[in-house]
Amino acid sequence: MSKRAKKNEQASTGEGNDNGAEPAAKKGKKAKEPEAPILYEDPPDKLTSKDGRAANMKITSWNVDGLRAWVKKNGLDWVRQEAPDILCLQETKCAEKALPADITSMPEYPHKYWAGSEDKEGYSGVAMLCKTEPIEVTYGIGKEEHDKEGRVITAEFPSFYLVTAYVPNAGRGLVRLDYRKTWDVDFRAYLSKLDAQKPLVLCGDLNVAHQEIDLKNPKGNRKNAGFTPEEREGFSQLLAAGFTDSFRELYPEQTNAYTFWTYMMNSRSKNVGWRLDYFVLSAALLPGLCDSKIRNTAMGSDHCPITLHLVV
Image (cartoon, rainbow, N blue to C red; front, top):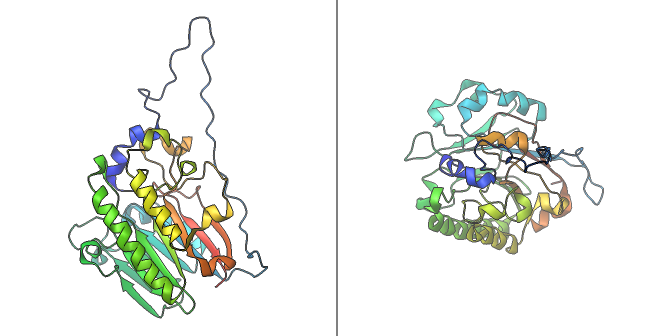
């Protein structure tokens, strides 16, 4: 989620009482205790598919909200512990020439790919780090208006494509909502074209909470970036094109499972958040789905990492 959007989140969190204090109690009544936050506990990883096959691919995605700051906050220590086969990062905000040596020299991932914004320094940007070399890697979706912002990397592997994306935010005051709607149409066409050749995994910050279950305060956010009817419909149309939200496939009724919390108003400790980060799968990959994880205890960004276990 961009800084523009983060700034309008006082309304988004739905906790706008001055400094978060409870209203004064009525005369003669005891002050109401503040409610304890309802946290999400990531359950133990499932490493087999429904048909009994063992997972052989582990992919992690993380919006790091500035790669250099994230490295300083020891984000790479967590990555080494998680040890995915492929690591995808979004909102790196870092030109390739300015990448910290801590990440460029990682021997665990000999194959590293970077995309950054051509126009704005310290804006947008995605990365993909792989243990095994892909067959081919491409950047963008083939449309200049979108590709200049460094938002998509696609890697082809023997049995699937992996697409990592940092989807444009509709912005404060929805100033980019029309652009976002154009993006959604063009990106869906790009994914469908790939899917016709080989099944794909899409991961990243898709900048939409699809359903009311996907954010803490849906009622107060219908006109805010990430939860407008237009953005939600764009995601619905992606699913209708033959793709599946892997987390909801496995955990259809799970509440309080979020991947983003604004830095304001202690939102993370209160678990007042949004689920903006996804693994979306082609239908052909669904039989190999083992688990879709939200690693919400991992710190270092205003987003947490997510991890996919898959049989490919």
